[in-house]
Length: 176
Image (cartoon, rainbow, N blue to C red):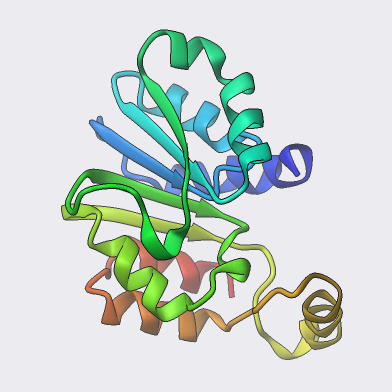
C-alpha cells in the first residue's frame, strides 16, 4: 500500500496549507508514508497517526521510528468512528485512500471534523470515486474488498454539512 499510494500522496501534498502547523493527524495511517511526508512539510509539527489495524500501527511506528524517538510522532490504534482525541486538537487532518472503509461516512466525517481547530483543514484523498466510467471497476472493488465509493459531490456535501468548506471542497472538485 505504501508504494501504491505514494504517488497520490505526493500529488496531494501541495493542496495542504503551506504555513507551519502545530498539530497534524493522519487518519488510517497505514504504513506511515503520509506521516513521513507530513513531517517534512511541517518540520515543527507534532504528528499523530491513527489506524484501526494494529499491524498498520506497528508498520507506521517502525517506518517513522526516528520521529517517534524525537517525540514528534505518536501512532495510536483507533477507529475514525470514535477517534481517541479531544475536540479541537488538530490543525490539519488527512485521510488517504481510507474513507472507503469508514462504517458511516457522513457521521464519521462529522465526528472527525470536531477534532479540528477553528480554521483547520481536512483533506480526504481518493483516486477512486463514483463516476460512470469507473462503474465497473468500483462494483468490483465493492464486491471484492467491501469498499463504499461515493461521488465527489457526495463527499463535498458531507464535508460541508460537517462545517468544512474551502480547501476540502475545492480539492474534491479538482479531481473530477
